[in-house]
Image 1 (cartoon, rainbow, N blue to C red):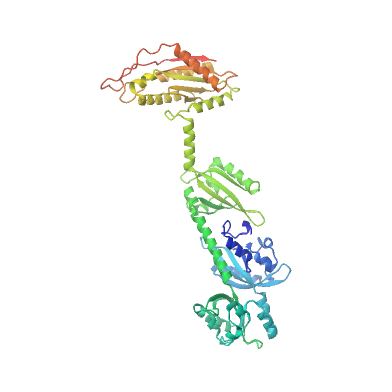
Image 2 (cartoon, rainbow, N blue to C red; image 1 turned 30 degrees about the horizontal axis):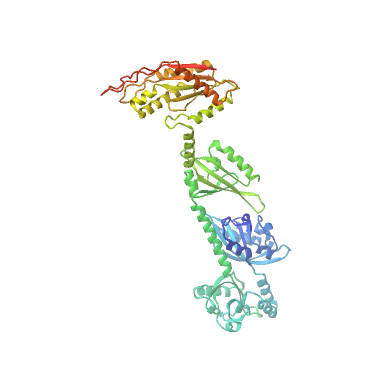
Length: 578
């Protein structure tokens, strides 16, 4: 059995024993939707009716029934959908070779959460032999006995007082009783006590009308007192002189009922697994509308499960991710890929975004046509945030928040790749007198000064430029487009920005400066050579200036806020290498 042929609610379950029982069962098992279209059938259908499973699935059950019973079948089916109570009936089914078989079906409705019948599970047994036997009874007692003696079902004849007048030999194999041990006893003696009242009512109904009755389920005690669940069909032939009794056809349905219970249990387990899964699961139609969604998915999306039934995945997908999702879906439905997996963003009702890992597969019918989509959704928002944070930390300075050496080198390389469009330049900065700040006020104050300097540098450059920290008090500005004039102008703005005193609570005002080396990329420069030339220019500037003659004055006892410290070097020395 393929997964495509499994009834809804069983697909994917690893229930080997259940599958074996279904495949080898002598009873017919058919699953239809509420409209009567066959969704699934077991191999017994082919053995009994001749129709292959592929020929049955997708067609209406009415296509295989005797034409003179169609109106009655339709009326009875509508009545069944209204009540959804288990029902049993005997109908004539057409065989593939043009014949007919009488099938006794027991139907059970499977409701959805709203109480509407969505599926119908029918288990049937071939009672053609019993019908032939009953017809033969009308023509010949001898022929009747020949048939029933060789039937696997137990055939019993009782009179109008329910006294047993005849028992087929099969009673011994089915119940352990020999015919002679049962003949002359009341038929009610064989009925288990808990079913005796039902048997009495059924007997009264049988006596009130000639002909066969609907099947009843009764527990019949075997020779050892063990109850055997049997389906009993009574046929009132009291007025037939060749019979003068009620014919009872009894079939052991213990295995069939056990299989039905097992199927129901499996469906309930699947429903529970779907509802209580820790990850989001949804059944989606081919247009993207949610058919079913579990609580976990609703929680991820910040909605109630019922709310999702009015939405499609397109309605709640972030616009930037919708195109990729639809492209994957098109490839999936066309058979080019078996499924897809992607990271995407969903929009919650409060406009917040949740990152999810989406896995989608397609559910196909027996002919391979797509029917539904099965989506598994995992919330990865926290993981995504952590990944982005780690990526940021890997490329940014932890103190100033500026891009670090790695990010600067990457940006220089990217800029050089575009130098055929415009010139590229860099500024290499080293703060003047910063060691004196650390020596005088300590490294904590030095770190605060660096943070202020970093903000001022970022504000002084153009939006297209990048400022990065590449060392203790060394900074690099990557400029594009650039020229010697542009670099000189940016260097002067940096000088102006650094001239302003830095005010820190409880300390005199601190002023720091910087020596800047400038370099414009030439055609043979790579990242290392361009940065090296700017660094060399910066050092030449350092060497050409007289270092400060004294450190900043340390704070006196009880300094007043805003008392200026002696400036170290407010001017910017810049030289351009092109």
